[in-house]
Amino acid sequence: MQISIKNSMKKLVLFAIVAFSLSSCKKETDFVYEVNDVLVSKEKIGKGIPKTTVEFISIAYSDLVGSTISQNDLSRVTLLYLAFGDKRLIEDLLIKNIVNSPVVNIPTEEVMRNDITAFINSTYLKLFNREPNEVELYTLRKQISENTNITPKLVYYAMMTSDEYRYY
Amino acid sequence: MSTFIPRRNFLKKTAIAATGAFVAPYILPGGRLFAATGNRIANHVVFCLFAGGIRNIESVGQERGNLLPSLLGGAGTVDPIIAAGMDPLPDTPGSSLRSQGTLFRQFRYAQGPTGHFNGHSTALTGNYTLQDLSIKEAPKMPTVFEYYRKHSSPEQNALNAWWVANSLGPYPSLNFSSYPGYGALYGANFVQPLTLISTDGANALSNPITLSSDEIARVNEMRNNFNASFSKTGIFGDNAIVNNLADRDLLQNYIKQQLIDGVAGAFNNPWGAGAAMNDDMYNVFFAEKIIEQFKPELLVVNMQGVDIAHSNFTQYCNNLRKADFAVGHLWQTIQNTPGMANDTILIVAPEHGRNLLPNTIIDDYGQPALDHNSDETSREIFCMVVGPPGKVQQNQIVTQITGESIDIVPTIARILGFDQDIPGGMLPGRILNEALV
Image (cartoon, rainbow over all chains, first blue to last red; front, side, top):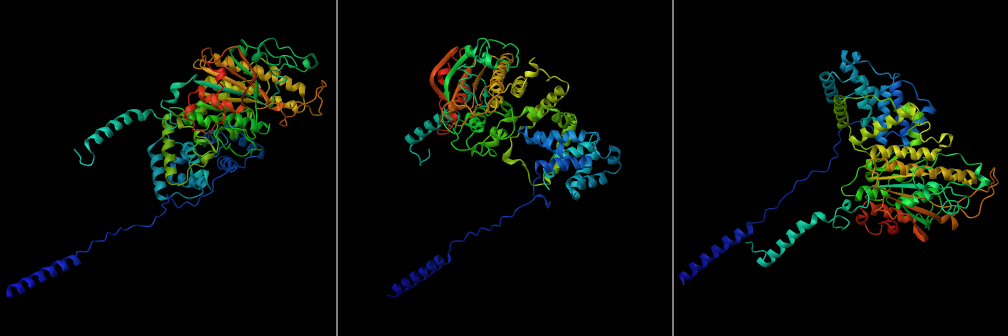
């Protein structure tokens, strides 16, 4: 009888241990930590409105020639836009022509090389209507300094055929 | 051996997989088994929209004489009543197009308003437009250019697809549609030469800055940096086609050269037609320049000078002769262009006809003018398919009512070998097999 009680106690203790183990063996919860979607923008440039064809032509002309394009000339160039399907191509060709025109008001190479920082600042203000940030200033200054074949015309052409110049 | 697949099943699946791997590369999206370009009849198609509204009565019916000697052959005799109103033209070059192909005398523009833009849209999309179109919108259904560029194998660039229009207005929008999955990405190079290759064009576009390859590299480097600071791109979005950079250079040089040639007087009297050279002829002339320069696989060119018929019947006949001369010249140019000679099929068709009954306007020769208001006569047109022996049935005339405007796109697709790749239900027309060998 004593043996039986001892056995019963043994079993009870074993049961208690097993029951405790089972109850404490809870499945671990997997927590997944997420972050909310954040719109990462390349810049803080507040330009969101694309220029119309007419705006693009008249602004480009003003930026380079320093005067307003006549209504007749504006109409003629607008028709040229319509006459070819690849608008980027025509726009590129148009800027190449305006930049190459003898009447354009682009600083000389000497002016640019004498003070590259001032040239970049004034060109950004003129064409992008803002000052360059430090990275932009550093990058372009480095490019101009290291490449003697970069002329003011090339800088103007590159800026005026960039995505930013197409917006205001 | 995995216990998840019984050995018999494993072998079966392996065999299927091996077969699939062997066959899969040849199954195209349209369900066709072989590459599209492997089944072409010819490698080039030129489609001339002989447009502006032309009645069969004056064209193939020859009621006012033979106004189409290039197309139909024979002497260009004209009704004496209106003969004095005809401008002299040089002799028609070469033999008649009819002898080199098949003429469908009773073709039909069967449905939809007989408007010029509707007719053009139908011819280029292979679908009738059953209501008035918005002339400021791209077609709803894909154009032949999009089918060609998207479904050819391999895909073709825009330099191979051209839409050469004689006027602006709504016509620039016909180089691609708004149909989902097609659009500007597969559009044609559109050009309206009479505006672009002009004095205004020369003033604005003929003197670009010339850049060395090193300068181009510097410009690209700077531009890439500018663009890296700005998040918005694609200003023209889906509203314009875009050529790749290499093709863009070719095209810019081509435009520049045309402008320089124009300033130098090269286009003053290019065909020896003198004062008779009208806008239609110039439009075809510039299409020929594109053919010579780029040898496109698909080019569509139109003429619309005959629409003067609204107010002047005699000049309608005069311009019909000029359009005929232009098509003859176009065919000669194709045959003189290496790479396109003997490998090009030319399709000629008006977009619609004109009314049986005249309006009240009488010209200097006492002839009443003609409108086009969707009567039965204004739906009667012709179609000519011209090409080398072995590709096109020669010297054949189909006299019974056969073929419609909507059949031209499927026929072009068949010639260029992508007809089977166009999804079902897009094109209600049929291939004009009567004309093809």
